[in-house]
Image (cartoon, rainbow, N blue to C red; front, side):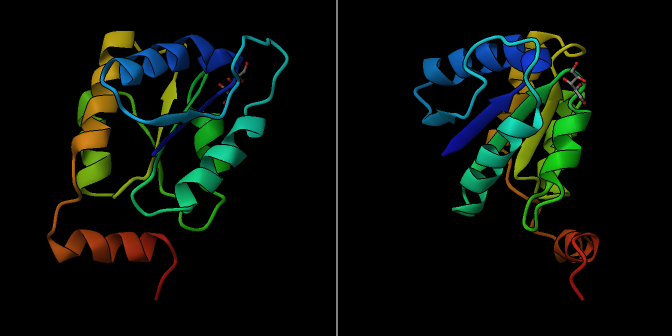
Length: 145
Ligand code: RB5
């Protein structure tokens, strides 16, 4: 399952991503915001996405705020979340291959929609590189001994 979340800065891009997933028949949960509200706080939408992702190892999250910075900081507070702030299709691929990212964070005010949609596809389709060095590094990055 794919969990989506955004604030006002990411609302337009989140809606484009939602339509993109819908078109492909991919199952998702829209954790909001489901309407544009210039006063909403991105933190309200990070928590339900994080809980959805932590429910099952195969679940994925996509969070969009103005820059992607706020949502990535908030998501990475949670143990088990590996949220990657992604600016390009290459970043999306590497976030999966090297970092096993389970949450994709995007900046709605700074990313072109076609690039963002391709980044979403790559994020959803790319497995982690099986070389154990990447798993080791992510264990160290997560504070595991
Ligand atoms: C909201 O104006 C903006 O600060 C927010 O969307 C995000 O970019 C924060 O990191």
